[in-house]
Every structure is written in structure tokens, then in C-alpha cells.
Length: 362
Image (cartoon, rainbow, N blue to C red; front, top):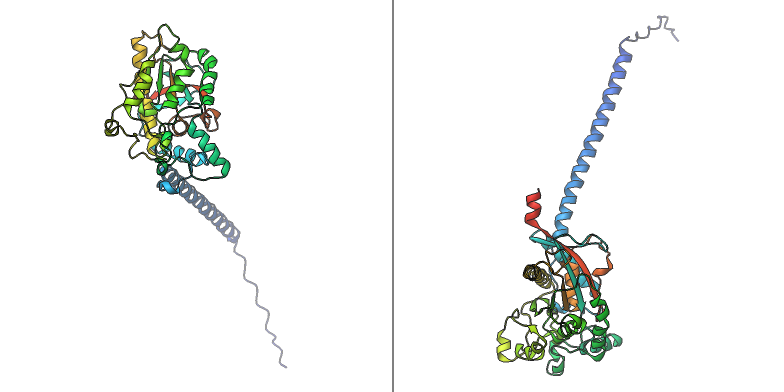
């Protein structure tokens, strides 16, 4: 085999600038990776922010209200309605010209824009006894639905039981000790609420040398979206005959065609959502009465002088819609917003925040 005697080729000479070129390339690649990572992080941040905005918008949107037949019985599942009313309140809040904010217990409540509001649920009624029996049987629908009107005519505008009257009287020492004392009593015209209010505040009405005004108001009637016969009002002529001798003013109750016909009176078209709107309108009405009464009373009605303290005798569904969808709380878990038992009374200091005041301050 022939041997190649040619000399081996010399290896190429290494360029002295090669190290610098390599380092520069590595730096450029690293910078590109960093820039790419930053761009990706920024893109993710912007996307997540936009999604948060969408989520916030969606959370304010109010889902359609299920048909009445698909809604649970309030007595059995009040939490369903609480959650719904919280959504309604959040949905309505931005459009409200006045906000009613409940102060923490012990917070300074002597400023001019604080309403001292005592809320009391009526004592046990005959319909509550019927409901407790139904719950004990495991029923899932109310036993006093409108379909049973002919069978249960005595359930229209359900009356107090003797236990219910005792519950109202048991509140009298607490009512006497309220500071400031209510200068106005407002009651639902349904007899169980009005009688509870008169019994609870007997010291300021029946027994007082100068009784405080007592107003009946349909605005704080029980929610009628449930179509329960116990929540129908008797004709105004019957209700007036019962309570006007006690000094109750019915001038704020507007007569209806059903009143003229001597028939039970409902709240036409009310839904589980619109009761929140009625509750807000009621607080606006109540605020106007409180301010007018304080002015007429020379500012002596409340601790702050600007608003007279007010007591309201009303119902469980209305109260829970008020505390869930109208009143605003710093603590979502505040127990004062929970379900009221029969005859239960609570007093709140409510700061009145007006939108025009906020705009002027800004």
C-alpha cells in the first residue's frame, strides 16, 4: 500500500476576536430571553387584570329570578333568599342616592347624620304555629298558600297568639331603656305587627302623658312575593276600626280597589327582588319622617338633634330583605343582620351617606 508522505495540514489559526464575539452573542441571547420573559409576564398581568374587571362586572350582573314554584320555602331555606338579596343590593347600590350604613356597636353615634333605628319583629302569630307544625312534618311548601284561602280564611292578616303578646310585653323593659328614646313608632298595618309595636312601646304610647305618633305604613308590610294568605291585609275599614282608637294614624296607607270592595289586599307584582327596592324606598320615607319630626320637635328627638329616633314593628321576610339588601355593613358576618325570631328587637345606629355630599367633598 502506498504511503502518503505529504506533511499534515496546519490547524487553522484561532481568531483573537472570537472570544469577544462569543461573549457578546451569549449576552445578546440572555438579554433577549429576559426581554421575552418580561413581555410574557406583562402580557399575563394585563390579561389577568382584564379578566378581573370582567369578573367584577359579571358579579354585579343579576341572574334571572327563578319562577316562584322553583323558589324554596322561606321558613325552610332562608339562606337562599339572603344570598339573593345580597346580590340585589350589590346590583342596586351604585344607583342609590343615599346609603344606609350600620355603625359598629359602640361607634360614635352622636353625629348629625345618624339615624337611631329600632327594629322589632312581631310576636308569634297563629300562622307561625301552623308553619312550625308543617316543618315538624317535613313539609317543603308553606301550609298557608293562596290556594287554601277558602279553607283557612282566619289566616288572612294572621293575628297574634297569647304567646306572641307575651313576647311583645317581654320587650317593654328593654324598650323603656333605649337611649335615645324613639320619638316615632311606625308599624306594618298587618295586625300582628301593629299590635306588637303598641304592646312593646306601651310606655311611650298608651301610658304616656304625651304619646309619640304611631304611623301605619304599607311600605314595611310583610313580603307578599310568596303569595301567602297570612300576609294579605284585611280591608282598611277593618284595620282602622281595630287600631285608630289606639291612636294609630292610617293617612300613609293608600286605599286600593280591594279595600273599596271589602276584600283582602295583596301587593300586586311583588317579587323576591322587588321587596329590596320596597325596603329601600321605605327607608327613604322613614328618613324624611324622622327629619321632619326632629325639626318639628325642635331637634329634641335624638341624641344628635338632626334625626328623631324611630322604632319599626314589622315582619321576618321584610326585615331580612332589609338587612341583606338595603342596609350596608362593614362586617358581612355581623350577627345583627341575621334572621329575627318572633318578638325579637334590635337597635341599630345607621349613618346616612348622601351621594351629593360625597360629590361635593371630592
